[in-house]
Image (spheres, rainbow, N blue to C red):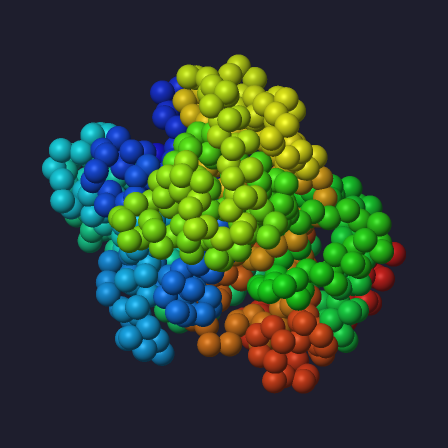
Length: 582
């Protein structure tokens, strides 16, 4: 069983277990790719052992050092990595015309050396590496299946779909694809609704079972959402929309106008407080935005919620928490415990040391590149030699490496997962090791929570690799307060009440974006709601949210996707007042 997101994987696992005792453990496409590549050493063409760089490592170590090595800006490197990833995902060799060829060539040469020296792999490489391994090898272990059940099929890109074809062709297995082309919103990773629409031509002799009823949305909610999606001129004309059950609730829907973005934020806080007073739990309320760069939309809403005494959670807190120096230092030290030759972990660990800068890193990196070694190999060789001719910061590095290597040598790792779980084991280890920093309370809580989401088969290495992705999933799906996130980030979630902020032209749709996908993104946001769907917009914006989307608009109007629909715009403050007195 395969799916795209980890959140969807967890939901699929629960439903499959109820339906069939023999159901296996679902996996994401990326997780499946890792498992096959690990069972077949040498076929991936990736640095081994496979080590995925997480968000902090990408932002703080990989991109800046690659940019310096290539003589490019960090933003240019980010663009080139995105272009390279898009080609892996689409199985093409397209290039961005605005990037000079000389810069692309210089980047590719620097990147190939850089990833070899630091030994990292980008997450977007994994499916492509599996596709290439399947194409080049007929005897891979771990691909013998009778049936592939693929959930969220509409989220798969050309590379993912190619993997399914290769698995089907080589093993003769059947494929069941489940999905909704109206919810295909991942064009940024080259997914397209055409992938699921052409399933019949990809797999001749297929059977089609159409799902036509939503068990989630109230009647008026699905009516409004259907109006939005049916207006897509590129949607197949014979494509039916979902209906609600006869016994479904009517549902509350409203499109609310506010004079300014400040009054919109305060209005959202009042709506949220009113929903809570009606008995809706804070954790069952989603506040969604189309975009939220630097908190342009969420920051004023959070402030208004705090003033109204309504607790809210920040699903992005996990990434911020893992960037805190003590937590990051601990995580990198634990990676070194698993593999003392982890080049990326050594590079990150030393970057956290005060007064250790580029001169020391260049001293090690240049030797590694010249000798065809990894950063870890060169670092330990120079450490053993006393860092001859090294920069003045070498003494600080020596002190830290000595302490870490002594601790690693004295700390055995259990062969199997401890009964209490890896998270509990790591916390006990941390509490009794002076060389390790004290993690924050939230990090401690996260490690314990992850024990319930990992399996007995997961090694310590696998557990550490899942800290960020599973932590992000937890933050998104489990909360004691109101959750604020983008519409795209809400995919796979369900809530009793959904409030969508900033529903005006210039924000929804985003300027220059594919209008069909913008409709699908809005449709996804609207269909998260069971009973309450409240959309808001502001006639004028000032500050950060005024620069979101089309910053040239002085006076705004509500989103054109709603025009002529079943819900008319009305004064937000008046609606809230009337709602409270009803």
